[in-house]
Picture 1 (cartoon, rainbow, N blue to C red):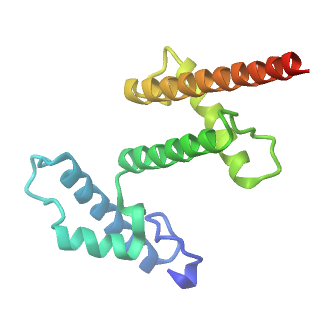
Picture 2: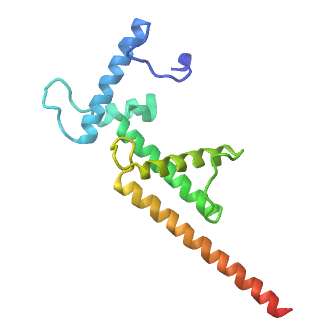
Picture 3: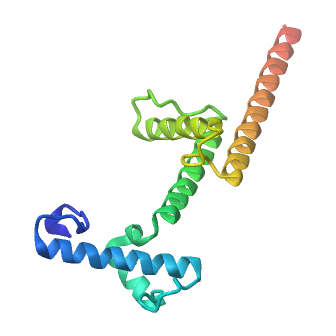
Amino acid sequence: MAEHDGKLPRCSAAHPEETQLGRWLSTQRRRCKLQSENASNGTAQLAPLSKDQLQALEDVVGDAILPRKELARKKWEENFLLLSAWLHKHAGRRPKKSSSHALEQRLGSWVNTQVQKMNRKRRARGRLSDDQRTRLVALFETWKQNKLLLEEEWFAECAAIWQWG
């Protein structure tokens, strides 16, 4: 992989060796999916990966072996945790996608995408799960309340200074 800028082999590659490796990797992804679903595919052609096989593939290709849905869920969870930490560190201020800081920009874009997905009603594809929606709303509500409390404390301190003088 080092020779190929960290890219995995593709099934539709021009070079026959890459095509063969891409097909093999695609098969391993399907086997991984069988393992994550803890079911068989009804045909005796594919068996789920053993724990050792899965570990060896993860060592070589990392998360790229995970089925796409599982990988998307994992990335969503990582971004949610990053957002939660961001809100905590910045007193509830949402990250801006127009920021000059890379992390804030990335999180801001991610938040905007999640808000768009929350507003999708008709199309199932691209929507948030009920759990994801609930968790995001709860996170924003918590920090909204914290922000209001901080603002109330600020005005209370300001009033105390006015009375002191």
